[in-house]
Image 1: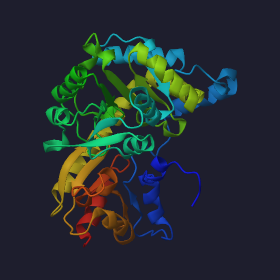
Image 2: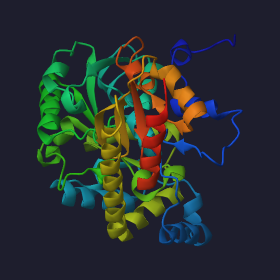
Image 3: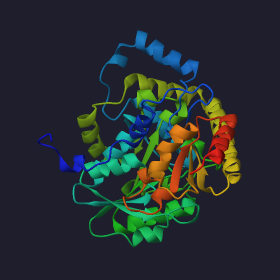
Length: 392
């Protein structure tokens, strides 16, 4: 055993997506049954050519693209985010409310670091996004699970009942990873009101906001003149513009909190990728129509996923939206052993529900997450055929 070793880190589970990839080791590719990989929620195609050219041109001609930039992000991108958020949410943001981060995961880490320390508690709905749970565990912060109700939507009053003197924040992800659920505006407002009344932060991760099926703003929190006292919003450019490898996210908060966030970001990475920020800004300025087309395609795949699951005997679709379907399987065995068997026997790589639930929770073994965004309509039909043919 290595010494010394942080016990909180040692107790944290290993990265689930990497764990699932290890199930492929030693398996020869089958040209007659190519792998259907629905394990990870990340675009597999590169950005549009225009965006790639903008990054390439900057790499060749802008010396500053290879240097450290401002810790809270480049001014033009921060301003562009503020302008777009004001349009989309009816907000009154300035660039001072925006921090650009090394992906949305870093935004979450910075948000948590600004509100909680070891021994504190943070309430998160289950099934949870596993990287959120991992970070809380590493920091010695207790993740308090909040069960979801019909439609995989959590109840604000149920969250209120879990608040203790150690609670520092409520966390929401909408559209949700892993369930795909889109939280109604009144539910989000309910969590905001509870957080405000109890002196807590509401951390709202909207990584998948560009693929919400609803028209208009998904909530009205930014219209509240005192929103910055309670709300911390997170966002990712990775899904919108296929910039996953460039690691560009955003944290939107009150100006006073951004002063604290700056300390975290400077310590972790100094600044977000310069080329990634250049690409994100170019995307915001030039890819509005293209992104609308991407959203329409994701919504078509969501509908195809819902139809396909409806035709599977014994399967129950609990949530479906953005990139994800959360489904109850009909087999007696736990999804923890079922998922590796699906790789070997059906050529399907998905994640078991146990990766998204507390240890010992009876819902985890009965569910799986299907990240369908990278599978077209034909691929979704093939996925359904393989699941239908599989025998537990």
